[in-house]
Image (cartoon, rainbow, N blue to C red):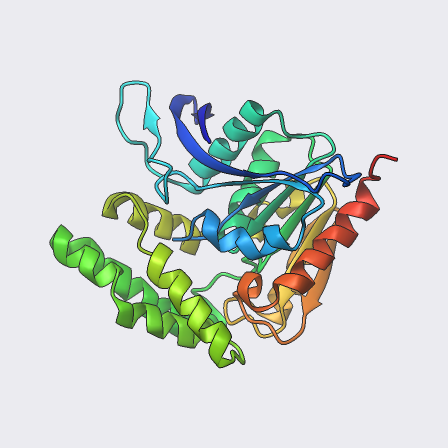
Length: 300
């Protein structure tokens, strides 16, 4: 379904449409709360499918973030595309939540860059979520410490795509070779079946951005911000679900993030890297179910 939304970013009115996929709960379910899932950088709703499958007793709503999948970039009142910053994405989540009447009793879930978006949304808009779950949370500044070498390579890649002619840039951005390198970097102990599945997912959907401009803006947003920036103002029960071998975070960063959250909880998923939603979806879904059950009793 397509949901018209309106939101405000730094006093400027923004409007657009967001494509949302709704998954109904099993008929016998006694769960009243709904789950809103926010995907990561360069993904779309398809990346959340295994989590949805693992939570059949919930009503689950999964949007394509603006500029990805079937959701066009958001514009100002005069039709000019707005810069796609963390604040814009956070405001879009607010506009979508208003349109869908989400809040009290419901749970907000983000993955990877989606964790930054969710944290910024909670800090800036104070919607009455019962709980927040952050899968593969962005806890560390990637331009420091042991994460710096990998981040520098990625930064050069996106800077190159900014200066190339658009057709050439899109070819590089959608290059199968680049996707293969990314899989090798993020994958942890994948067997042949999982490797083939992740490769196919990225081949189909990682190039599904609307235009280079918005993609590069969202890359900047995803690489310059962490959940920790917003953590002290996320004042709802928050579960961090981190892979033990996540190459985009550090144990110290995850610990400091948990300590920064007023109601933070940390659960480590063993044997998983950053792509925990592909690598360990059953464990992730089970952790979500247990956490939501603890903070929001289901109806009898």
